[in-house]
Image 1 (cartoon, rainbow, N blue to C red):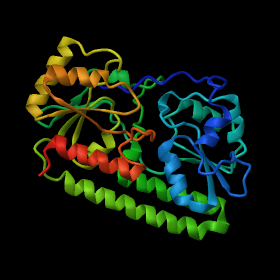
Image 2: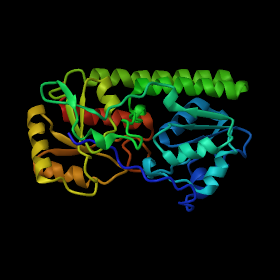
Image 3: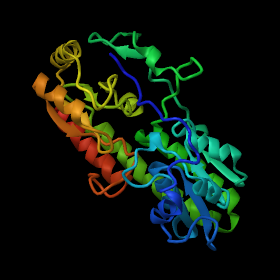
Image 4: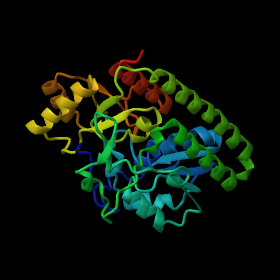
Length: 326
C-alpha cells in the first residue's frame, strides 16, 4: 500500500504576510490580540489545540489561533507579525512536528509557557507497516516515502483523532494552565473534568458503534486516521501515495479494486480541506461510494459539526454506514 503524508512546505517565516494579525484576531474567542488582554492569553497552533484551550480555559482565557479556518495546517507559513505576536502571549499550545514553521517560531520565542501536546501522550509510527488480507503485517515497500529528512520514520502527529489520547493531552494542558495561572486553577480543573467526560462519552460511542461491522477496512485520502483505527480495531488504507490533484494509475486502481473486494470496502473517504478529485476518481473506477471523513484539522462552514465533538460524531456515523455496523 503506497502510503505517505502530504509534503510539508518549507519554512518561510516572513512569507504569507497577508495572514498578519487579522488571522489571529479573527479566530479568537476575544477580539483582542494575544498579550493585550486582562485574561490568560493563549496562542494555539491549529484547531484541535484551539478547542482544548477554549474548553479548559473557559472565561479566563483569550485564545487566538495561527491557522485560520479552512487553511490546511500542514502547509502553514507564519508572517513576521504573527511570530512577534506569539512572543507577547502568556502561553502557546502546539503539536510539535505537525507544522515546522510553528516549531521554529516557538523555539525562537521567549513566551514563558510552551505546551507541546506531543509530550503529553505517546506518539506512534504508523508509516512503515501495512496489513494484508490475512491480517499479517509486513513492511511497506513504499515506506521510504514516510521517512523524515533525517532518514527515520516520522511519528504520526494525528493523535487528536483518538479521543482517549486527546483526553490525555487535555489533562496535561489543564495542568499547565493551572501552573501558569494559579488564580484560576480550580476552574481549569473543573473544565478539564467536564471535557474528559465528553471525550469518554465519545470513546464509548465509537467502541459500541464499531464493535460489530461487516468490514474493518476503510479507504481514506490521507493517512490521518491511524490512531483512530488502532483504537477501535480498524485498518486504514490511505490512497494518498499520489498527489491529491492527480489521478490514480491503472495499476493502482486495480490494486485498490482487489482490496475493496477482499475486504468488503464500500466507500472511499475524502476530507474537507484538500481536493476530493483522487478519491472520487478511484470510487468511480472501482464502483465505490464516497463520503467525508474529517481529520478535524480545521472547522469551516462545510464541516459536518460545529466543534470537535460534533465532527467526531459525524465521522462515527460515516464509518458505521461504510463498514456495515450492526
